[in-house]
Image (cartoon, rainbow, N blue to C red; front, side, top):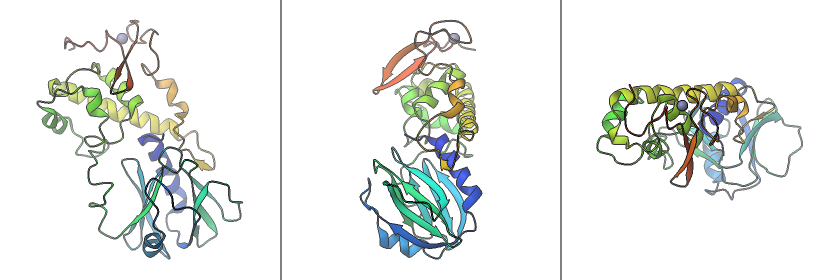
Amino acid sequence: MPELPEVETVRRGLQRVIIGKKISAIHIHETRFRFPLQPKVLCKWLMQQTIAAVERRAKYVLCRMSNDAHLVIHLGMSGRLLWCDGRRELEKHDHIQFVLEDGDELRFRDPRRFGLVDAVAPGKLEEYKHFRHLGIEPFSAEFAPEVLFERTRGLVRPIKNYLMDANKIVGVGNIYANEALFRAGIHPEKAAGKLPLHDWQRLAKAIRKVLETAIASGGTTLNDFYNSEGEMGYFQQYLKVYNRAGEACDRCGATIRRIVQLGRSSYFCPQCQPKAGKKK
Ligand SMILES: [Zn+2]
């Protein structure tokens, strides 16, 4: 399943090729996705419009059109965006074709159909139903240690579960939560409300660093598809704890442990991430 870094990689790739192009036709071969596709809405807001910008909100890719409407795409479990010449043969799961004036095409391919393709009217993005409950973006100014510290006071839920809650913070998937907590020296079961401000300072920085590293390495695995299969590309070489239970910690040599939180694996170094806060 694509995570924020993969989606950001897709956004950057798309931005390089699609800005300034006009949509001259939309061919829809399938409407049964996780949320049914609405052909009329798509055509109403996107047809004959030029793509002005490619943006991202959480794990959604957004194309802002010249009329200020947005094309919204979520890759779901298996979605991909293919940028190609319009003469390229359609494949089985190429469900939607956005035909551009110059003959190039953006295709949405999604074998499992958990994805989403939609259009949002000008000025309606903030109140869009899928965006209303989304948490803070890790790369926004709002993602500040002071803000996170304030918002978590009194919370007893474990910090790792808090980081992975998209209603609180978007885009921090399991791998990234594990890695960021290791880098910040914080035990995944520690209560979010017990983290002092200086822990949040390290943690906010670690989250950004981990995501940035993943984005940078994701960019190297692209071919003519925009990689959205959740392959981590070269990011794997940076993993310090994830999937390394029983191995020695790079930093201190202690044995990395695995526990389960909300059904997801958490990996940590008991020495670098002590449960009782004896860290500096
Ligand atoms: Zn260690």
